[in-house]
Image (cartoon, rainbow, N blue to C red; front, side, top):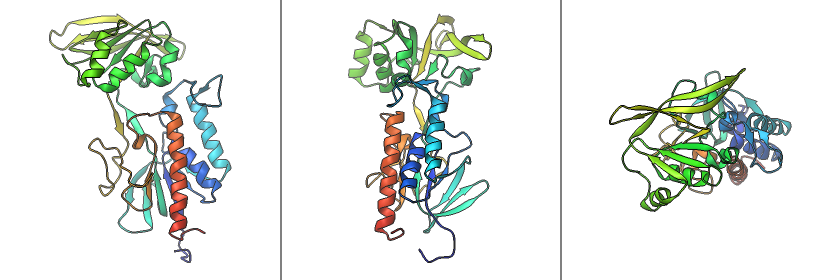
Length: 319
């Protein structure tokens, strides 16, 4: 493989969030000269976040987009080639593998899939502009911004229970809004929520509208409209913050079926970060159903790059 005149990349990294960029930093410093396809919306979920206060090294906090800019600059500094292009498919039927974008087809010996997972939202009017301005999908990330506030959580599974319980550390009151008459969560988690003095539960109800104030170009959530699914009665609730806990969708639709996935579409890894396909690795929120933090995603990127380097060396693709 070394003697071929055809250009074959050592490593292609798919994804431009903390996982992909960290993988690029480690792979570049290992002289793998990786190519990163960061996507047209490069930066991942942190591009929807305002202040990040829990990433080590930034005691005063840092804006999510700014943090991703720093990640990207560091990856480029060490030699990562970064393209803001979406990968639309992979050919894994023969080696070297083929990575396809709308404009390119690149052959590569190894691949790291770091495409993350997207939080499910309600798809209501003005939702995107309110994300980070009262709307959130991560209590661990944003809960501290809502001290002594009146906030609500949408959902009925274990994640919603965990979010609501976590937010009681900061909020004056937490309202849990669920569209059904009983939770899908485990009994122990549901019991904790129902017994908590700071948590109120609204059953059989959905959010139908966001209320907000606009200050110049900035919108801020001020409340919501609620609709009872049985009576169709609509009520208004004043809120400082609303947290979505209705699940995540792993960004794996573009991948061929030969890569093993869970029933929910998350990638499965067999040996450390390697998937069932030799030389194809997966890292970050595309495999992580539990933590979903920038720091754990970055750590996964580090691990996948080290695993890829070791695999390339063991297979005598690199010295």
